[in-house]
Amino acid sequence: MHIKSQKDFFSGLMFIVIGVAFAWGATTYNVGQGARMGPGYFPLMLGVVLAVIGAIVLFTSLVVETEGGEKIGRWAWRPLLMIIAANLLFGILLAGLPSIKLPGMGLMAAIYGLVIVASMADGHFHIRSVLILATVLAIGSYLAFIVLLKLQIPVWPSFIVG
Image (cartoon, rainbow, N blue to C red; front, side, top):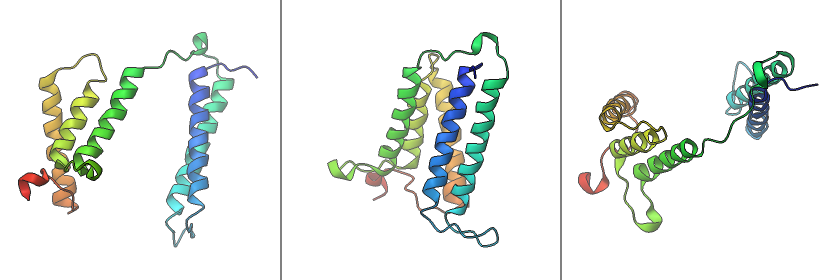
């Protein structure tokens, strides 16, 4: 068979691999039954559905003709590294690093750090719109996680609230 869309082929392959890994990992937990689901039921079903979607995408990449074969381009290193760095920064700002005695800065600082660093992934960085987005996300996260769900997440830096 001839690959007619490289993007779809590798996307489908990635979905299949991740889906199988999730389904396989879920079997180490008690799966249960449909009426009495165990902790492994949802990840197992999620993995199976993801693998099936991947198989469909992979099949269409071999069957459906695309213009130019949809070749895979170069890796976008800057966005990839900035998104990973933003997530790492979020975790460090939220919980701190006890090994080097860095205190947690709380949810608000973590969200601002996440949004600012992730916004640098794009070539068009506008501080005003980034700060507006960070403020909206911070308020929404506070309302969702602290007020509605009543999660015990530090909101402000530990050296401020004690």
